[in-house]
Amino acid sequence: MSCVDEKDRPHYEELLHLLSPVDGWVRRIDPDHADRPQEPPPGSPMRTDDARTHPYELSHAAWHSLSHAVDHLNCLLALLRDAHMIHMYAPYSLVRSALENASAAVWMLQPGSRPERVTRRLRFAAEDIRSSEQVKQVMGAIGPHSKQERISQVRDIAERARVEAKAALLPVGYGEIVKAAGSALGGDTAILVSWRLCSGMTHGDFWTTLSGATERVELPGAAPELGTFKITANIQTLMYVTSFAAHMTGLVLQSRFVI
Image 1 (cartoon, rainbow, N blue to C red):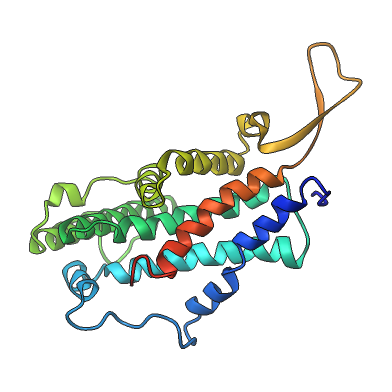
Image 2 (cartoon, helix red, strand yellow; image 1 turned 120 degrees about the vertical axis):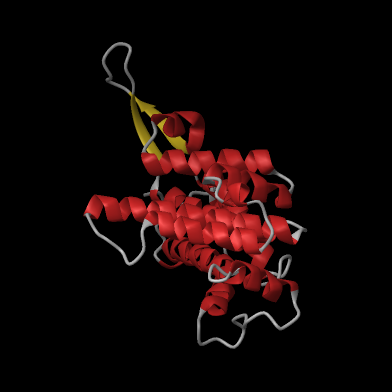
C-alpha cells in the first residue's frame, strides 16, 4: 500500500474526480430508488428488442452488466477515498471487472441495427450457458434442462427473430467485447491495452510489474545478474486505466445509450 506524495497527488485527485459520479450511479442501481430505469415503454426500440430476445431480454442483460460495473467502481472508491488505501495490485482487478461489464452493456446496446443487437444478446446468453454448464459438470450436478436443450432454445429464439442462428451461437470473449465497445469512446486500442494490463495484474503476470504499471526502486545487495526491488503503486497508471472503466460505465448511465 502506498501513501500519496506531492508527485502523485494530481493523479490521485484526478482518480477521485473520475470516480465522483459513482455515488450517484450506486443510487441508480438501487432497486428502491426513484431514478432506477423502469421497463422500456411499449413501442420503444428496447421493448421490441426485449420481445425478440425473451427470455433473455436485452435490457435485463445490459442492466445486469452495468450493476456489476458500478458495484466494482464503488468498491474502488471506498478503498481510495474512504479507507485511504492504495494497493499495488488489487485495484486493477476491480477496474478490470468494471471495464468488462460496462463494455458488455455497451457492446450489446451499441449496434444501430436490431438484428445485430439481437445477435449479440443471444451470443452473450449462449456463452453464459456454456460457462454454467462447465460448472455443473465439475460439480456433477444435473439441472432441469441439458446443455443441448438450453442451446437449442437460443437457436430457436434466433430463428424466430430472423437472425442467423449460427452467428447467434458464436462464442464471444471479453477481448472482442472490450475492443468493440472501445470504439464508442474513440480509443479501442488504448482501451484494449488497458484491459490487458488489468487482466495481467489480476493474474499476477510478471510483465505487468516489469512494464511500468508499478513503481520500482532497485535496492542494493542483490546477487550478480539479479535485482531486488521495492515495488509500490503507480497511481498515474491506475488513474489511466480507471478513466476507461469510468467513462465506459458513464456512457450508458449518462444516457448516451438508453435502457
